[in-house]
Amino acid sequence: MIHNRKLSPQSGKKMIWRGFLFSAFLLGMNQILLGLNISISSRDITIEPPQPRILVVYSGPTYYTLDQNSKKTALYRLNFEYFIKNGIQCQTQDTVLVVTDQVEPYYRQRIDELDLECKTKYGTLVKLITRNDTCYDMESVRTVLNDPVI
Image (tube, rainbow, N blue to C red):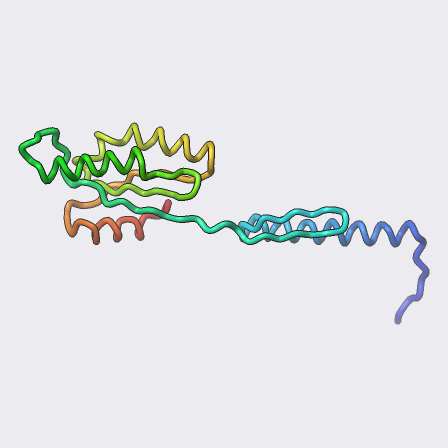
């Protein structure tokens, strides 16, 4: 049985308002779940897709030495330090540095400070993770893909 009842102008406004609030709630949930940028005004709803994020993975040195006689190891260390100083762009990318347990203590504090700075200013991350001393770059890739945080 269908009831025909007349809506007063007030009850009609309440229904529109409730519908608007429900729509805003659903859009807000989409924003949270999908990372969409949603803005709602009194007449328009604007939805922008999330900005793509870049992940840069650097497979760092296996050994740490200041010995200049070990030119290959020194070159890897200098390249790694150059990348830390010049290659990490917090505004546009997340960065993961992959090193061995032997190298990690020399860079941990510096990378943690960079991570805090990037996270605070731009919402990006800079992580230092360790890998086994096998398979070089392929072990770095495996380590990053299996890391639950990244």
